[in-house]
Amino acid sequence: FIVVRVNSWEYARKEGDNVGREGLSLRLVDATTGTTVWKARHEKSSSYMFYRPNLKDVANDLAKEMIAYMPPQYQNRAASASQGLARK
Image (tube, rainbow, N blue to C red):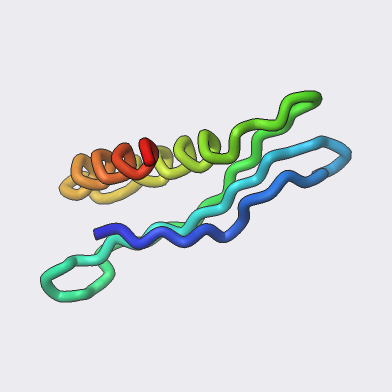
């Protein structure tokens, strides 16, 4: 299973620009043993002038990017799990 932690979720100013910022930590845990088999932490920013980006969309894109670096044997399961969460 995947454990997700939201490290940042905000609209801010960075170097004079308006940005929507999202940071996630993902941890893939083997449910039978409880051991962590993979983990990652990353942050993504999306700059804007007038319309704020939807942070849910930024987080969804970030999760997909992070899952792409997951070991291949786990990628399909993780991708379908993240799609299910994005719909909620």
